[in-house]
Length: 188
Figure 1 (tube, rainbow, N blue to C red):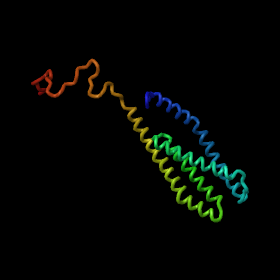
Figure 2 (figure 1 turned 90 degrees about the vertical axis):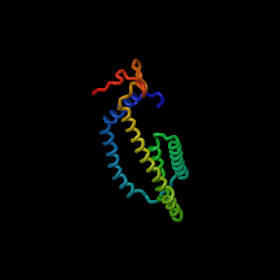
Figure 3 (figure 1 turned 135 degrees about the vertical axis):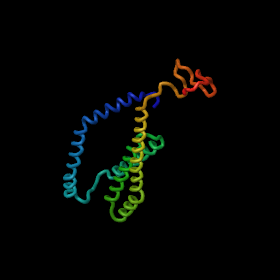
Figure 4 (figure 1 turned 135 degrees about the horizontal axis):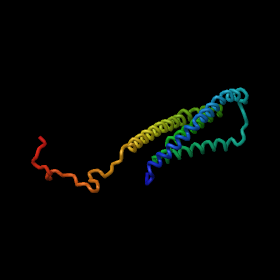
């Protein structure tokens, strides 16, 4: 890690985990409350919104979504090339952007454009999204295994002297063919 003390990293990680554990109950209540609250809200919107609507800035909205999708995929590409720890997060963002793009392409199209949107979703966007989600899963598992291996090696006692080197003040190890002080004597 280039001069970073592993003990200070472990202490920092432990402080973050302790902080998250303290607010865990509140996080669960907020996320659970929003998830439950979205169910009746979605039912209300489904029943009350018109099936057609004239939208302002339609072109900017679509261009913005596609730009976000492209940015997420470029960031994922760079992260994979650099073997970054951000690969799982960026892969999940890229996959989600692809699914959202496919959903809105299909749901907002009509007539002949519906068939093209559906074909694009089935042939390009959903398979690429699946690849992104697979990459997110595999990379997060690899990072977890790497962290576990690092923690296991960090827990092992550190050697006090380099391998095959005598510690300072000690006699060098005897080599084959050297005379031992008890040469010719046996323990029997």
